Image (cartoon, rainbow, N blue to C red; front, side, top):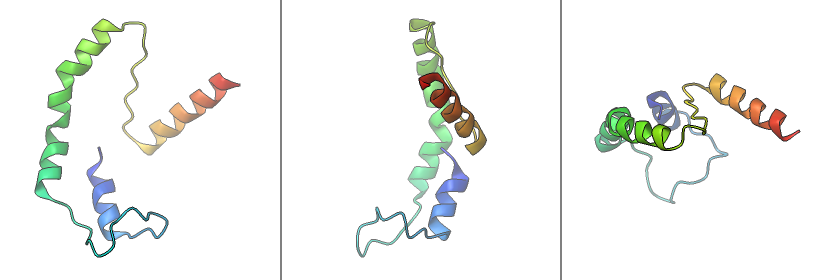
Length: 80
C-alpha cells in the first residue's frame, strides 16, 4: 500500500471515483496508517511460507506504477 496514494485521494478529489457514501466525509484514520506501516512485517513470514509451498509460482512485488505497467504488459504479451 502506498501512503502517497492515500493522501492523494484525500486531497485530490477525482470525480470518476464515486465510491464514497453520500454525506460521509473522506478521512484518513491513524489506524489505517498503522495497519499499512506494519503490513510488510506481518506478511513477511506468510509470504516466505507461500514461496516455500509453491516454488514453481512466480511472486511479483509491485512497488510503483511503472512496475505495474511492466507486469500488465507481460500479462498481455503472454496472452497473445
